[in-house]
Image (cartoon, rainbow, N blue to C red; front, side, top):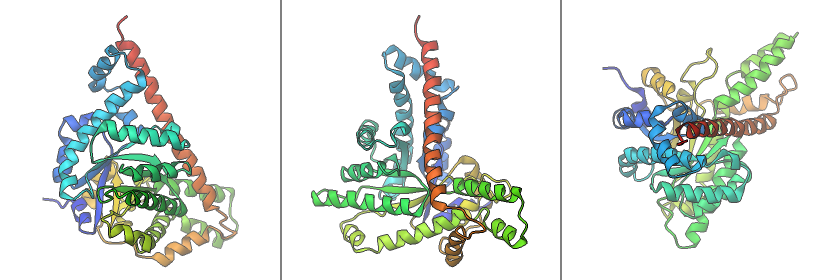
Length: 381
């Protein structure tokens, strides 16, 4: 029998979640098999994933028809489909949740991406999603925008599990970690139990390299006279996302050593783990498992799309590398400021956050449009 390297990763304190969900994998038993036999111990979803799952899939037609007969608006029909899939996935992962004492076994669902910049609407929807789905092991995804973080703090204080998504910069991760801490402090101050709340900070990877590699390729395409400059530019390609993630993990370590965190830990609080997201390699010249191999380390999560899960099970090279080559990581990030390179990392991160929200809004709206068409087809004349 061949070794499943996903199972080895668990020995290093990292959990492997899957970045995919559809009714097909629930009904076929594939999800159950992945959880029971392949080492998958959590699920992340997003509007893009649900668009792929629901659009042009006859499996959902009966429930859409039921929604039409009940006179539900399209948005409520969408929720009825997605909430059912989330509940069923939560039930499949419930044994993992119980066996890990609430560390793993979560299924993430995102609040509508159209409210990413609206604090109050995010709080209202996070509460409603958590209540209507009605599973302890559901995690509500909230974008790590400036207006999103007060929402994170508030819903954490109310005992709602949160996955903060679309984090690109190290500073955005730090801000997220403190929002989680403030939420726990608020809850503890009210005399409430904080031991059952879980949170992850979803730190995106491949999109950073795609953006920066594109900028470097544009510079090289214009022509570089100096071979030293050309070498400097080429040395950065495909390296920034991993360096950035390693630095974020160092900040995580500082935060969990702080007095404020230690006071919460003494009351049973769970650490907010860094979750590596956007882990499918976009450039075919790079290893298809580079965002797994290079970031294995304790108290972290890596969420992988199905193709990366298969690739990693087959040929991941498992070792604890999250704290290797740290000096190199800091130097690489510093090298972006070199006049010959001249890439403003803060501008890149802002671009990526704006793009990231857009990449969720568009499929969400596309799904609403395709559902609307289906509702019209299935509506009695």
